[in-house]
View: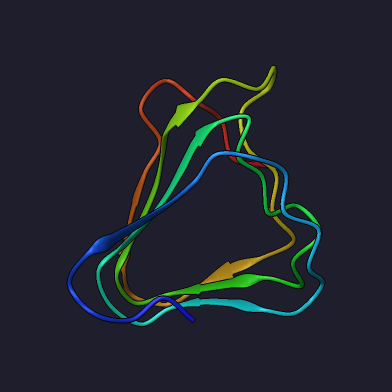
Length: 77
């Protein structure tokens, strides 16, 4: 769970299998940052994928919530 007004930046491959919840602030995936093994993202904050450098962009299981998602030039699959 990402909560509060700050930014949490993930730069490597994260292999946890539970859900990802952004309750506040920003979850920022940068470089090769990945949460593809997560069971899904509930975004009620900001989900920033604009810094992902992986070929094809970012991959997640599902996306729900009312928050903003920033892709930049990336794709989300």
